[in-house]
Length: 180
Image 1: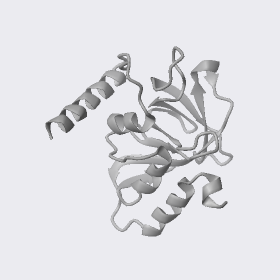
Image 2: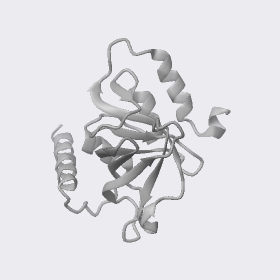
Image 3: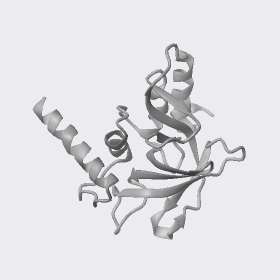
């Protein structure tokens, strides 16, 4: 119990330090571990499974909110998805995120990036596809990534449909496993 409390407080202190602009610790971060500590959204497992896990537990949506977690779908090049915490809403089609393990920094993965640009590249402006700042090119990356949407750190409304959980679980699978 004491060890768990120490880990929790250490994670919270690091997240607060990152939010204040302090350098991240030398130990590499996974995106899910960092997003959980930084946002307070208590989900576990691969990033692409967070959307399904959040059904009925947290409010979900397609509009960015500061503190919400943007959940990326699994793709052949990103097999476990990705999660990033919204740190600012710049415009209806641009946000800033703070996240871990996206761009290699000083040649190392697992680093935390603060307030990097993410733009909505979906045709309908619904945040179903995004492009993310990528450090090595010094600009937005060259790929668009499919996303589920945003998990908000508020409880889900009572009576959230259970069928949505099953659909999200299949959607979280890599295409070759889902049979699509």
